[in-house]
Image 1 (tube, rainbow, N blue to C red):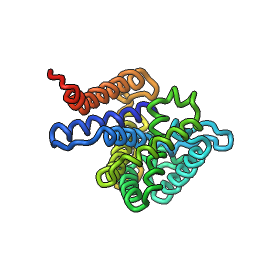
Image 2 (cartoon, rainbow, N blue to C red):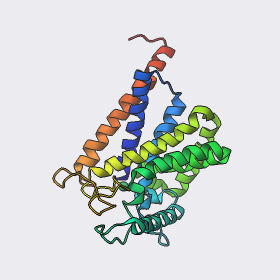
Image 3 (cartoon, rainbow, N blue to C red):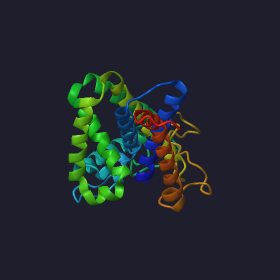
Image 4 (tube, rainbow, N blue to C red):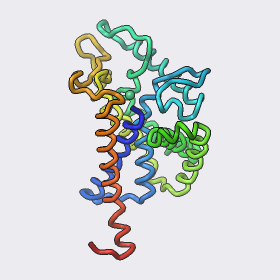
Length: 268
Ligand SMILES: [Zn+2]
């Protein structure tokens, strides 16, 4: 579901940017909009970094786990194990035994809020290299998710080089005052969009964690099987992705269209 998650993150950020521009007169530069969109698309893939593959073979894992080759596969392995450890530590009587940490800790609201806060703090306190590092990582995830067919052919080395270049270029032009908190917001919103995306699949996500219900801490909340979106099915690959793409394009036109018309003195 990688590409759908990434596209939904981009659509929500662009749609939201258009809404605050139109209704609250909050304007952003085209660069801010582009960076926010990419980081939110990357953030919408972040929770699936808990899906590890086989590190030594360089295979398997979620789409995003392959972004930076074996380095990100290893990271996914660590995240999956840490998530499983958190699950085991906090599980209650009626929570089932698990062998894998996928769809646990990284698929909770505290994780989403925590990642957003951590990003904002790190980009403010960590200086130049922290910002470049965050941008590098998030842009890599976004490239992998948004252009997945191309990314698979291009391979992780090219993605790593492109993300590094884009991160450095962005750092040079992104204003610190408004730009850095925006990075954190985009990461947090992206994670939440991911959770909503997984809620509509039948497996569900532990969205209530850490609130216990009926002696269960990790209750998987999803829609009933009859209504659930099947992963890789037509509804996901055509209908949902199409809708996200249309929303993204419409919002982007709404955001930058008027400025372009004005620049060339075109009146409609
Ligand atoms: Zn997920």
